[in-house]
Amino acid sequence: MLTGGGLTGGGLTGGGLTGGGLTGGGLIREGSALVERPIRPRWVDAVVLDGERLGHYRRRLDRPDRPWVRVGTVTEHAGGPGWLTRTARVLVACVPEGDRIAAYRFDATGWQPTAGRIRPADAPGASLWPAAADLGADSSRLRAVATFRASGWGQVLTDEGGSVFSYHRPPGGRWERNACLRLHDPDFIDEGPESVKLAQVTGDVDATPTPWGERARTLSTSLSSAGVRGTDLGVRFDHDGRSFLLFGDTHWTRRRLTTRDSIAEVTDTGPRDGLPGVRFHGSPLKLVGGRTTMREYDVPLDAFSSGGDLYGFFSSNHFSRRRVMGRSVLARAEDPRLVIDPASRRAPVRFRVLGTFSDHHFINVSTQLVGDDLLIWGSGPYRASEPRLAKLERESLARLATARRTSDLGVRYWDGTGWSEREQDAAALLSPAALGELSVRWVPDAGAFLMLAGSGPEDPIGPAITLRVAANPEGPWSPRLRLLDWIATGMSHADPFTRFIKAVGEGDPVGDRIFPGQADGTGAAYAPYLFDARLDGEDLVMRYTLSTWNPYQVVLMEHRLPWPPVVFDGLA
Image 1 (tube, rainbow, N blue to C red):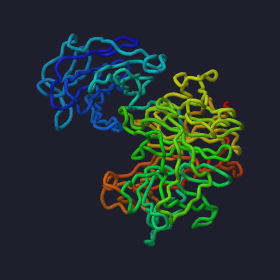
Image 2: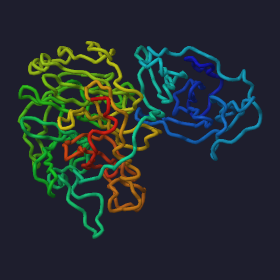
Image 3: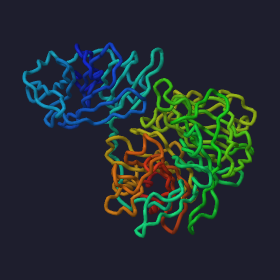
Image 4: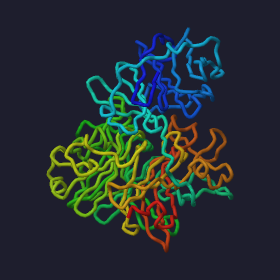
């Protein structure tokens, strides 16, 4: 058991050869426990202390994108960290309560007190654990570590200032985060207006019904015009005086490769006054070379124009080395004219891969040309990372037209005080965070950089789309502003005619059935990308695209924010 106030770790306990799966460490502040199985585990269990409540969490290990899920509460009266073991094939939690160690067993009804007492000597002892530097964690925030192994890989749970992350390390590799169990960032503002949905971008008709039984046309009518049934993301970029949107895992009609990504052009005239139009290309995006893959989680991230050419960042090789997203690559469009034709079915927009950009801190990226430099904000392991900053300077951009590999470009990374040539020196711009997709743009009207992202698991801000602002690309970044509570607003039970995210499994008129894994579940909001922003009197009016899972579509949102916001004081 972890003791004292230092950086201490859990040790291996005996037993655990049961059918349930590997039993892993539980902690908050000081606690951990772990049991190792010699066969391939199916899941990891953890107990986490929050005040006097000891919570039980579980994470399945069959896919890298499985999240930690709260199973239940062991006790509301814990006097300190607990640990887990197995006795006669039963999962048991041992918990300090007063002057004794109480035992609880887990069965079909949940956690129940069990007879007998556990001697303090039965608690797991200390063992070797990685240092903060090994994990790439902030030593001033690292309060506890619990170690275990799963299928030959080292595994770690950490408490970093109240946030709980899991790490893994492949044989011979480095430690890297693989999931966030809980994000603890209480510094935020959740007062003010919520974002409102303006229109659905993709599909043919809006998923939200009207009181008179009709459904509005989408901004693209993508199904009938281009064969796009549903998609996500919607990253806007400009090239050669035109604007485009990049979409992620796209489901097409009459195609075997149903998740190939897509691209559309933004037009000035849409189906309603004040709204843009969106014209999809009838063929998907295609990456050429670089041993890239183009299935789920292999998506376009952002694009930029330089010297008349178009360049794009893409994620590739999902689930490689147990990562949700394996790496990011940089590629150049083979035809920079970007001919968009909804009727074209066999003319993919092709990008030739220059090489890997990152498999570490910049797997998801958002880019912005500022002056002569391309600024690149990135996150690493999916939905478990802080943002970091890199840049390509003017000389590097000039070499892009003839570059054959990314290692020749001279990428530089912000290390907290200056610029380094080593990606491992890239410093977190803020902490804590559990980012995957992120969108950062310089907004001249606001005189600020804006960062959109989603909230983390068990985040005190709730299920939210958030905004941070900064006067400089490296920060300091403001605390978060909540733009949207996507459950309260997007899944509102009070008004089905404004709800745009499916809220119930059966009988909800909002939703679609694009593919089996999505069809019968409820929706969620993710991947906010800034579409545009302008000052209107004393307000900054932002529009952003948002993905909703069910329906598996993209919507255009608007948020009106008094400018400058309170959080911008002292940052300008």
